[in-house]
Structure formats: C-alpha cells, structure tokens
Amino acid sequence: MELPLLTTLLCSGTYTANQSRLKRSIFSEDTVEIFDLLKAAHTKYNHDITPDDLYSLWVTEHPVATTAEVHDFRDQIDLMKASEPLSEDVATDVIGSLWRKETGLEVSNLGIDMSMGDTSAMTRLKSLLERVADGYMPDDFGEATTDDIYELLAETSDENRWKFNISTLSRHIYGIGPSEFGIVFARPEVGKTAFVISICAGPNGFCQQGAKVLYLGNEEKTTRTKLRAIQACSGMNREEIAANPDLAMSKYMSIKDRLVMKDIQEWDLDRVDSYCELNKPDVIILDQGDKINIAGNYNASHERIRELFRSIRELSKRHNAALLTVSQASADAEGKTRIDFSMLEGSKTGKAAEADVIFGLSKYSSNTDDDAPDNTRFINISKNKLSGYRGCIICNIEPEVSRYVE
Image (cartoon, rainbow, N blue to C red; front, side):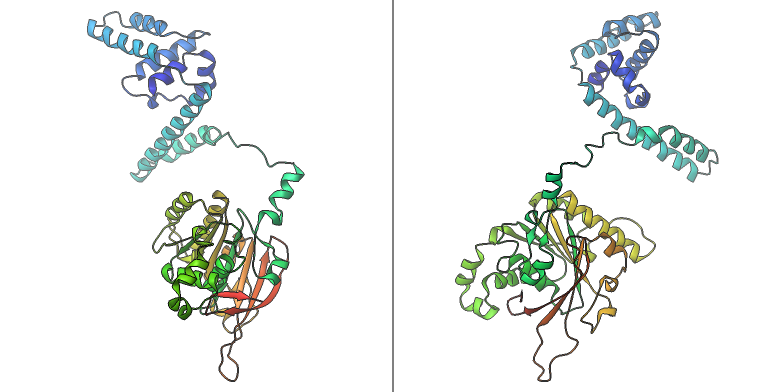
C-alpha cells in the first residue's frame, strides 16, 4: 500500500491537500527515504514530481553511494513506477486513518511517560491534543436530516410500524417501528414473557404481520419459550399439544420462519450486535436486557445500567429494528395495579431516559375469595413518545396459552 500511496502523492495538489496529516512514521524503513525526498521536492518545487525526479535528487544527495545502494534505490523507484496510484478520495481516507493511528500511539506513549513519573509528559500531551483536536475528528458527516415533508410523515407513520394485537392497546399506541425502543417491566409472575410472546407469536401478532422477530433470552431457556410461542400461535395448551403435536405444528408453520429464538446467557452486547447483524430482524426482543454484559468500569450499578440501556437503544437504531427489552420492577411496584417507570429496578431515570415507550404490567395484589387466580392484567403506559398517550389499559392473560386478550 505504501508505494501506491507515495505514487499518488507525486501529484502536487494531492500532497498539499494532505500535507498536515502526513507523518514520517506511517512509512516503513524501506519507503521512508522516498517520502523524505518527496517532501523536500514538494517544498522546493511547485509542480508535480516524477519518480525519475526523485531518483535524480537521491543520486545528487548520495554522490558516494555504492553500486548496491544505487541499485536498491533504483529498484524501489521502478516498483513505484509500476504501482497504480490510489484515487484521490481513497488516498485522503487512508492518510487520515494512518494519521489517527499514529496520533493515538503518540498519546499512548505520553501516557506511559506520565505513569513513569515524567512531569513534562502532561504538558506535551496537552500541546499534542491542542494541535490535533480539529483534524482528528471525522469530517464526513453525511447528509443532514431531510426537509421532505412526505418522507418525514412516512418515517413516523403508523404504516411504518408493527401493530400491537391487543385492540385496546393499539387504539392508543398503534405499534412499534424501526429504530424505536420500548421497555416491558413487571414484578415476577405477572406475565412479562407472556406479553412479548403474545404480541409476537399470537394471532395477528408481529410474525403474522410479516415481521422477522429475533427473540434473545437469557433468563429461562428458550426451548420453554419456543413452546409457549407455539401455544400462543396455535391456541392449544401443553396437554393439547402433547395429544396432537402435528396439529399444533401445522398451525405454527405459518410463522415458523419468522421467529428465531436463541439463548444468550453470559453474552455481551458486542456478541448480541453481531448476531443481530447475521439475522437482520425487523423486531428484536431482549428477555432480559438488564442481564446482558457490557464492557467498562462503573462506579455504581445504576451507571452500568444507564450505559447498557443507552447502548441497547443504539442497537435498535443501528439495525433499524423495533426493539423491546424485558425488565424487572422494583419492590416499590409490589401489590400495586398502577405502576410507572420510577419503579424500574436498578435505575429510576437512566433506563427510562432512553426508551420511546414503557409498558408496566401489573395485576391485583390478591386472588379472589375462592382462591381462583385473577387473570386481569393492567398495562400501564408511563412514557410514550410514539403517540403521546399515557394511561392504563385493562385486559386479561390466558396463561395456559401465553396470550393477552381483551
């Protein structure tokens, strides 16, 4: 790469445009002498330089060079002549990348000097950062946000979202779309997993609407969750499926190819990111997002959670997918039917700040007098940037088939 790059820099205009980022250290021992000559030539002459010009300058500067040294340099010049120059924009990007790498090494070396007690290293580091701050930042920012009103309307239209299959809910919040991030939280045994299974695999759920759903589970094994998805899709409980598995699978086949489940215990966010890139989903479910590992050192658990949820939101934008993460409610939500995002476990603000919509699921605090389970469920919407509605929607859970219904 070095010789094609040097060939490109023979052009006076290209050299001048990139001069401030050309460091001697980016070239190897074999080519750095050519760079030194090229730099001196461009400094003295205001025109393009040829390889033969470089050779003539070298011979002039080395009048007592041995025959072997002359042949070695001549070989380098001949290789340079045979090299195809890089296009100007590619050369600029390559030089910028190499310059940033070398600058990073300089900063690292100064950091080592500081750790060894060199009191002047901090001054040199400050001076270096002041010199390179403007140039180090990228200058290719892409296009600004469009002013096309039709494109803006289409981007935020309900037609661009996957509809919730609970009709009362969808009347207030139609659904969730690409790059939108939601949190589903509740106390244990309320029905968090059943809720996301129902809206994904149940009748008229995301899968039946044509969405490819990637369900990533790090709590219970997803073999159990997959069976619950088959129950939600078929409307058959476990006993009915065991008695007639072929019937259950024939019903499930309608969404089978659009629901991918994977156990991700002990995965970090980078691995999740790579798996999403492999599958290219329309909808991502993280059950549960709080348990995903994230690199870094944090002074407190709420700082880790805040950074984790910020990164999860970026995950939805990077893959242009709707993303719902399941989370726990704190003890503050125990026994309450009306709950809000201040009752999220681990972070009262950090989690909520990142979400577009937050669903808090709750139930009555006790069973009825005859001890029959009360399947009434409350969907509390305490944050909603999608439609603006905030309030409580009452529905029922059918736990035997993992469905939420009116």
